[in-house]
Length: 418
Image 1 (cartoon, helix red, strand yellow):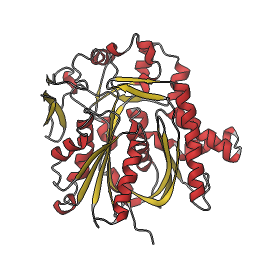
Image 2: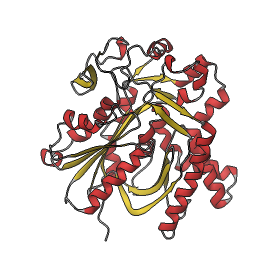
Image 3: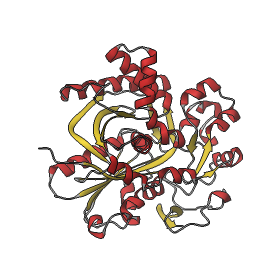
């Protein structure tokens, strides 16, 4: 008999400020039919005093604070999953360990594999729990990524094209244990597909490069290949009937739509009307939060999971199929079951309200941030952050539960609660 394992608690943090992407596209003069294919409404914009650490801690704090002292003491592993690291050696997890006041007997490390990193971290945590090397032990897995566009990083704004409105920021915190209230993983039910490809990459700490067409083809290949491997391992699975809902890695909604169409045609030779109806029913709910924060890289598929759980009727348990893709590349299709208890627990995190409460940036605010003058870049030795750069965004009525970057001294980042 398989032991229960999966996500016990979960939270999504979508930052402190956002931009209306339709306003941005109008401002950039982008082609509106192409914009509509993004299926985007808003994008989170990281403020200069927000970084991958603050995003991660602010996502994880409500999860950790909900635990008893005894439960907190059983967190024995902290895994940060990111392609937005701040140091080639020191992991983000060390900062999380400090600011979340976690026990000293923790295993701390970081995973980097583009947008697949979050799923890699989850599977590592799942196998830690299943191994029973420390019965009752829990693992905290946090995905955290930010995209910052700066005028200094491009010869012309047009070079960013449609990646600018879809690139966002966000973090997802997942507590993994043998009491999987949110998502009970189907142990052994997974499929992988991987090969070397130079679709998108970060060749420098503050540099992103890629081939959008190649990335789309790799994504489609991996979606089909990972599902085929899943079907090889799991007897009797049917893509259409086995999964009540689907959650895919979501660079933008249109890419998910294309992958779903590709699978439905490949597996069933489905017609356009059937494909469209199935997409709206089984994948439409997964876009609920993604279309408000943009591409969150390693956390994207879990932002989709949270959106699904908060958007659908979960009066009865439902099986969800998840597809994760990371450029370069590695992918995985896996599954799990969600139910009424998980829906109630996730709603208590107030994810939607937190997104509603973000500060709405004007185009002028956004252009000011694009100058990049106040951004603490990778390898900054000393800095003092300007917390008044966008006065309206600063949480003047803070409750002491929001972490922000304050200074950097000798490469060491110092944070404060506001």
